[in-house]
Length: 206
Image 1 (cartoon, rainbow, N blue to C red):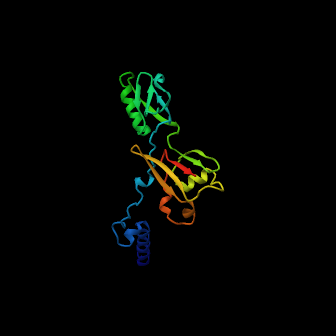
Image 2: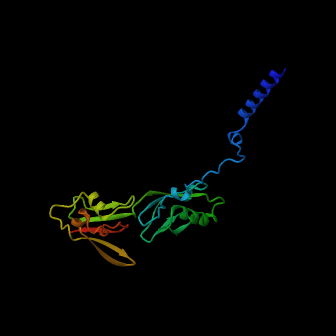
Image 3: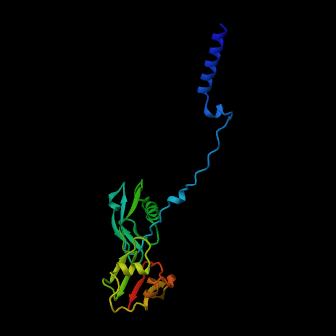
């Protein structure tokens, strides 16, 4: 009987230890705290597109197709829609414009659920002219500096004046002339002059 009692007690102790959580087996009542996540919402932020002159927009009213269609942003920065007449668009995001259209259409339809999508982008363009292989307009799909724009334009001609390239930029109604020395930049000198281009800039290669 004594042998049976001892064996039963040992088996019971082993089963109790097997069923207990690891923390309890080690004498801890609470698990170790976890480090907070370092991934924030800002790390996934996407740059917002701003509507500009020349862009083509698709406006869709889900409850009234009469107000829907493709519209061009005119040189004055406005668009025209049936019943709504002229509304400002340039300088706004598609979401901001959609909110404005919803308010304007509320007097004509009960549920003004509207979306604005950009069908064609023409406002974000720069121009490369002069002694390059393919002068003309370049659409800015992202950041682009002067050296990259020249490369997209096919590179410089043999007799291009590489040291006296100029970027023409209009700010607050005033034209600025920004010098660019191609020879210095490709050698890693004075890299500050290899600026990021802005919509409307013109790179002149004499």
